[in-house]
Amino acid sequence: MSETYIDQGLVYTLNTTNNIATLTGTDDTTDSATILSSFTKDGVDYTVELTGGAFNGNTILEELIVPSNFTELPSNFCSSFPGLKSITLEGNDIVIRSQAFKNCGGLNNFNFHNVK
Image (tube, rainbow, N blue to C red; front, side):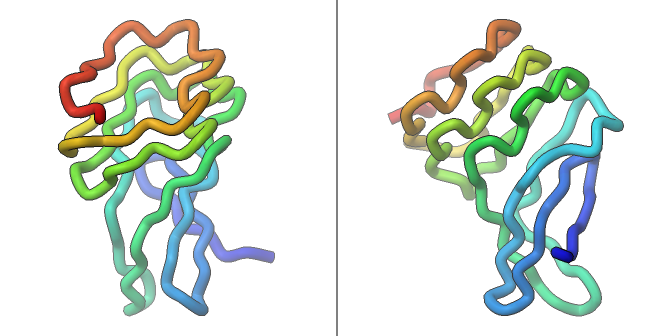
């Protein structure tokens, strides 16, 4: 069983070998969240990594903020995420991989000024 950490309804799966926390889903408890860049749990510092499919099928979360330390959104990052209405990318020169927002028909607020 993998150890997890939950913040603002976002679920992170912890790799205690390399201190990487992968964003893997939501617990469907909030409509707005900011992805963590890093955090400390039980005295261990974790760096957050993004992966595709973490929000697959989510209908509760409507607003997502991606902090400035992330410079790339992976393929299928928000694919099949019908509840998403707004995303804020705080970084500069962000690369968006293929199908990152596939099947996100509700997305109506997206600022492209930081996209490479």
